[in-house]
Image (cartoon, rainbow, N blue to C red; front, side, top):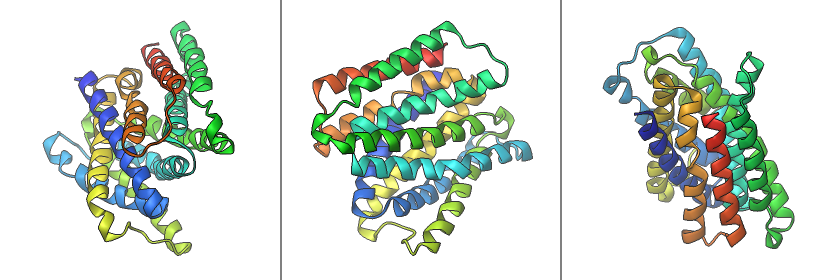
Length: 275
């Protein structure tokens, strides 16, 4: 069950991020993320009735805490892919996202397993290869910076939401999406940025929003039934989905060595999760 939920997360988030970058290039990253969050939160509501879900204040609090950073994570990710390349930004985001829960475990008393250390080394080696993109020049370095920032926010959010108990079901997911929506809506309004994408882009936003919303729900369900490490193993494949889609449909540059680096990054993240 946990493996299936992780695979769904990877596919859903990978495709959702591809559409998110597509929308951000044609509107604004804030508008894209706000549209995603509203659709994603709404699509997660039916899961409250399909999956046994008890309103538990502690777990709702974890969801809200995760919501404080996930909106920024998405905004940074999509903006990064518009100014750089998915082949640079997405793998960096994935590695940092995986490392934050590990860092949390260490800080709370867990031992750092040897396999985790190997995974970290392998991931960093893969990133060194993946982010080497001479034709991008300064944009490659910008992509690394945006990926680091996005991954940090994602890692913090998933660490919080992964603490929710199985009894609370999908309440943490719903509150995560709507908390992030409120925070970003306030910022967008203060800066005079449209809160939603143009009407002509709503079909793509609907697909991406539903996928990312249910994808996060799958992650939470997996963490509740297994562990953060278990769900991380199969949930770590999402950058490969995004990069391949961007390369095929958006003609983002993907050199042969970046493909090898991407596989290496995913392998490293899997080792981190297994460890």
